Image (cartoon, rainbow, N blue to C red; front, side):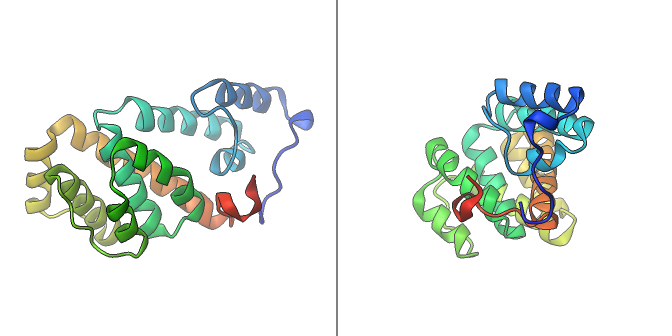
Length: 179
């Protein structure tokens, strides 16, 4: 972390340690990146990690579509940490290497699956124009349903927050000496 020194676990307040332990004992297994920044404000870290857990593990979106939305957002923000953290998850979830390569090059991928094209279009449009046209919205609802569309907006918002944290605090990528 270039702009904000990570907290030493031995010097954490009781609340910081409590939140730290909750994060480490959950599916993430460790505190790094934006969560390490947010831990300076333990209530923010607690609430954000709960939202993140929902977005990653409990939303109505299948992991394949969730990871596509995450990578699309990370690429728009040029958030290397998030990109590097989620490429393996996207591959494991079923996003093809060709789609990932296109995203990385900031090119529109050729999708084999209609739901991926819908998620990508919605994510790009909302992130880039700060709005979604009726056509894109209607296509998304028709393809994903209302519940998954609501969760898609939640995923996009959460990962925009992560991306903002990465950029504001100048967090290095995973492969830039941060681990």
